[in-house]
Amino acid sequence: MPELPEVLTTIKQLKPKVINRKITKIWIDKRTKTENLISKSKTLKLVNRKIVQITNIGKYLLFHLDNNQTLIIHQKISGHLLFGQFIIKNNCLKPIDNLSPINDPVNRFIRFGLKFQSNNWMVLSDARRLARITLTTTDNISNIKPIKQMGLDPLSRHWTFVNFSKKLQTHNIAIKTALLSQNIIIGLGNIYSDEVLFKSQIHPLRKISTLNQDELHKLFKYIPSILQQAIKAGGTTFATYRTPNGNIGTYVNFLNVYNRKNQPCKICKYTIQSTKLHGRTTYFCKNCQK
Ligand SMILES: [Zn+2]
Image (tube, rainbow, N blue to C red):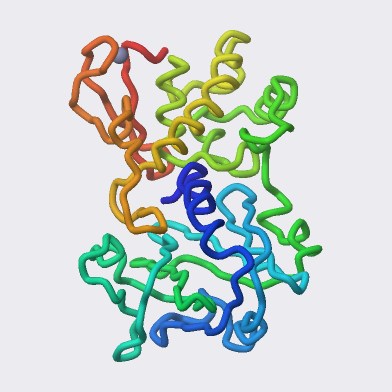
């Protein structure tokens, strides 16, 4: 699932390509359930509009238009946005250049596309069809329920040790569960929460009340620093995630524990283990993480 580094990489690459370009056409895959994607009537409001800014709140991508409307995209598990040249063929959007990374098989599940005056398209490829798109008044964004309940953004000016420890200590759950909870901290998913806990030398199942000040400081430091390093690498690709130009995210080469079950720990050589937490696999080094 795209986490904060993948969302921010997507925004970084799309900005120079779509900002101030007029939208000339909308395309929606007929086989996609309309309740998952934007309704036809709402898409009409997008034609002839310009995207003036792209921001995010956690994993929500916000495309602000020149008419006080904002297109909100949540990519969910397998959705990712691509940018390039496409043509409509047999009710599908197909890339024009067969040799481009855009033509990678994971990029062929196109559900939605915006065509710009430049003749390029920004499209959403989503194999699992779970991504959500909505259009709302820009002033209304903070009233949308999941956005209203969002926690602390590790890459914002609100990220202070006082705010962080206060927010964390109002819950007494396993630290891994807390890191995944978007109403506590936004943007961390399974990959980066495992990496943060490894770096902080904290076992994922530890209860928050058992963490000492030193451990809280480590988490406070490593959450934004690991996210920043992943952004520099263009995010992490395991299965479906691609950057808008169709390429993979290379942070996968820097992972210490995630998806490394039975491989030796890069620090102590002890075998990396995994456990299930809320149905999701959690990776850790039993020797390094206490
Ligand atoms: Zn280790």
